[in-house]
Length: 199
Image (cartoon, rainbow, N blue to C red):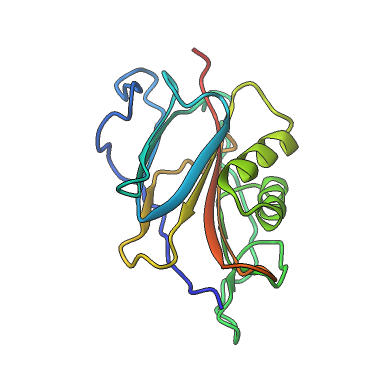
């Protein structure tokens, strides 16, 4: 049985620059993710080496920091999302996503329905972070301005958590999905899809 790990997205102030990404660069449309107690992570699409997308992590300390310089210019209207009722069922499942596959034990989304379904289908297919990131990017159509980040959160580290900034705009998508597969160990991913500014 998949132990439910509560991962709460937060909107908070900047902690620091990440890699070569300078958060004072205008426009001030930066988002960050910081995490600890992480098993693995990967990315696809825009390279995570700056200046608009940086990913710095340490497998030794199981920590990660990600910075995105978001392209919000085309996003005048916030995303409206309809979701199933969020309930803990008799099997300990908290699936607030549209995909109700019984292997999904935890799911929470900040995405439009089409992207949410794309991510949950990919998470059911791929257990490895880099495969998951590559599949989501490819299935999304491989847009030149998109970065996909996959972050596997430890289910055994009691200090494991993510602090995530979000925009409720179409330029941002994030799905937390915990899966108890038919074979193998349970796993929990956050998958982030970001439309970035061009350099």
